Image 1 (cartoon, one colour):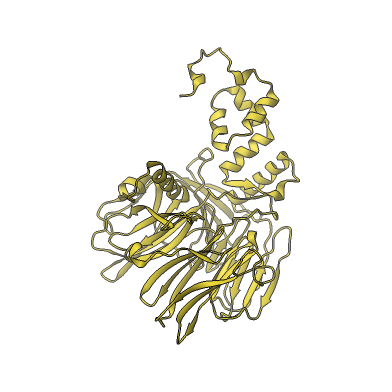
Image 2: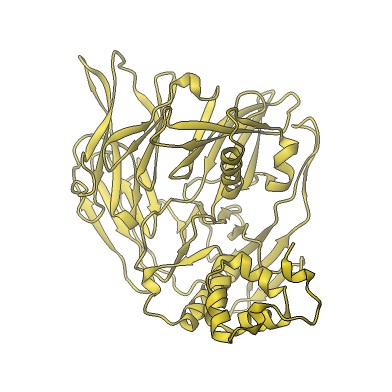
Length: 501
């Protein structure tokens, strides 16, 4: 209980007796959650916080899931607030300030979109880097004809000027060797922060092909999730040293592992289609043996006669360095995971999509460490899913990756109806009225609609043994598009509508 609550109503606290400038200094050391609580203490605190640009900036950055960068150091708090509010309004109404077309040649054997950079390879031997246009820059492209070896996949982090690509090779005597290469995005030369820019792993006495490969970077770690022959493997390296950090034998991973995602640079999760399906959360400690700890198993709803056929997980990219090209960036805490699931019943397929905040996984890791237990926590669906997720039947598809950024998801509707949808799971601001708000574009055509979804979603008991009810709130924003597009991507500053010709 707050000690001030025990004082008589008329008695001032020590904090109330301090000069305003001292109180501002004290309140400036709080995070946005504490500032929200302080606004409820008394009208005096509320007035101080509302009247201070510095405190309002802390409050609104936190509520928007953003944080300031060194790129904003030259701005005053009032100027930062203006830019932040303009950015919020643009996303709230899907009001883009500029539309530009960028032609990106070649195929898409592998591609990636991170921090305003789109990168793709045509043949597996070359690389095209496209810096997408912004309000401050017209964009540019750079082509590298050969990087050496056949590129199977790659991952990048522009804040570290880093690209790591997978180039596997086969030697009749040695077997399969998985080769990773750390380069700079700017020059495609070996990265100066990597003591061993080329590193990898040897799989002796196997000549099987890698049939699937997925790479992710989170801070000093790079992960490779791949299928070699009939085995699904997950490896992680410290790319700065080239040493393997995580190398679990298949028996240490769940049966029927389907996909992988980082939670942070010190945590990850994998999905499994075994039984009713589950999400498994792990913590990483590079200095421990083993370096990974199985924290929790989160179970999916119990099915009737259906079988969970696939369970993929997707989240936004991890940027570990400081951004100097923009005043704000997404906070690491403000991250959403989107899990696409396909259930099969007598040959018929039904698709669902599950949305869950990254903080759900983080809280499990923190709880595990505080309790000091040695066994992973097993949570049935009823213990975690209804209140911490939103489970929807999937009526749209995600033909391109990078459809998640922070807590936003961009969803196409259909080619017949050129409408874009954005689901925003950052519902911290005072809840807007639950009715739909429509506006008009300048030409008089219907513009956008925004609705705050707080009522639960009910999935009937046909695929599942019982009705599945989920409550995670979100904003649904729709806007008509000038034409139909087969897919969309997004990052912090833009929506990319894709046309393939």
